[in-house]
Length: 130
Figure 1 (cartoon, rainbow, N blue to C red):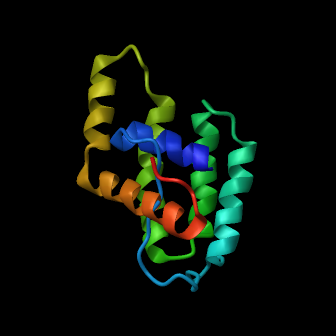
Figure 2 (cartoon, one colour):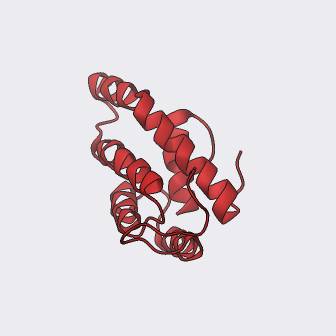
């Protein structure tokens, strides 16, 4: 999942990492898991994903939404799912589709979601920021 988050970040904000959060460090969301369990899920999902399999990345992000340890992480993941879905379905030879995707990726809400996830991963899961 770190790889998924990395792929997403590179695509979304041109950096090489992704995940962030505020909120308290020990609580879980209403249907979420502990931070430790969430970070372990990211590791498990990352190991199961193929690097270029965007359809699996969408499914993995959707799975993480249901176990988000905070509402902030949940919202960030929910914000990114439509972008990753669009990336999975894009015709790389269609300049209009590429332009539309770039516009979507530059949306301030999408960029904030990437920042939220990047910070969460670094501060809570110990993932390196690049």
